[in-house]
Image (cartoon, one colour):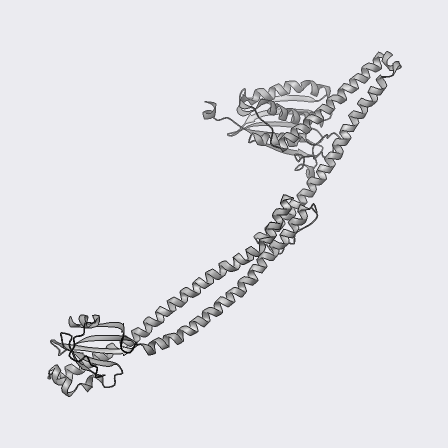
Amino acid sequence: MELIKKIKEKKQSLHGIRNNVITQVMIFVISIVVGFEFFSYYIIRDYNESSVVGIMLNQAKYNQELYINYLSSYSLDEVIVGDKDQFYRNNNAQVQILDNTGILLFDSLAGNKIGEQIESDDVKQAKKGGYAFHKDKNNETGEVEISLSYALSDGQNQVGILRLTSSLDNVNNKIKDQMTLYVAFGFIVILIAFILSTISSEKLVKPIKNLTETCKKLAKGNFNEKSEIESEDEIGELAKTLNFMSDNILKKEDLKNEFISSVSHELRTPLTSIKGWAITLQSRPVQEDKEMLSQGLSVIEKESDRLSLMVEDLLDFSRLSSSSMTYDKKNLNIVQVVEEVYNQLIPRANNSKIEFKYETVYRRIDVFADENRMKEVFINIIDNAIKFTNESGLVKIFVDQNDEDAVIKVVDTGEGIKEDEIDLVTSKFYKGSSSKSQTGLGLSICEEILKAHEGNLEIESQYQKGTTVTINIPKVVEDEKN
């Protein structure tokens, strides 16, 4: 129920994902467009204003040359009285002539400031020689104007200041016209980005919706449901993973059902024998037959042991599955542990009439492990080797080590494992095709115990030739021993 609830919440958030994608894209695009608009405005404004200043500067230089070549023999006052028109002929800008102190001597527009001192920044700079321009708003007309002040000289000394002033209204109108086109272009870009982001987000959300629907069906137990793989990107990989998961669940379900059926059969068989012999032993004739009584009690004892073993496997499996298994780990000599298990199983091998060998060149290899659990692993694996090896066969135990691990190998010449079953024998509930298999939990329990000790289990086998099981357990390094 919790999974279904989460899936519903995820489904409701898909619209949020689409909106988030559109929002993020639009924020990015609008930021770029707005930045471009501001950048374009300043570039266009500076270009046009620079063009105006350039024209005015060329006009000032022309007037300077005119003064030097034709008017330098006259004083500035005489020029203003007689040939002042030379300075504003063919010039659309307002022309003003100032003396070296900044007092206005002439204004082409006949303004009312004749005789007043002009203190603008461009005039102050021109007093020092050279030229400067200044942009300001005309309080009388309300227009924004740009003024260029240029130092006039007679070729040797500065004789005055030529000041040209031009309105920027035409320039600003031109900038507005150009920016209108840029703004229209920006709106078109934003609109296209919105349409494309909407389409792209829909394409992104659609496969996620399909995956959500598949997950919802899987949560309801329909494990045959499969996701459509529409692409080879990350979502396609997710769909493949989801399909693999559903296939895996189906396999686990089949194994679980087979396990339940198998365990039910395994439990029923000894129970039937125990109940049958219990009923038989209650009859008076049997009670007087000591041989039959002994045989019946022996069967009851053996079948009870078999039941206990199966129940113990089930309990171990349950504890491992719920992570409630506790381990009493300590430094121990794994060579000694394996040797004890070997001695313990010698009678079992002798009863099965197989050759049972143990080989090692080491007397001590230290590992950090739970002794009883390690014995459980070795007993389970060696017992399997003995069980699946026919009479006159061989089971051999090797104890070795490498740089990192203690290595225990159990080699047998038994019936082996089919190639398609090797990867499954450690799976929970898997019994295999052999009639000698029982609950199918032994190797999976061993693997879980080894994982808890940071070790691992490796199985190599050839059908009808034999099997080699390798157990790797991390060694205790010198620092840990100390």
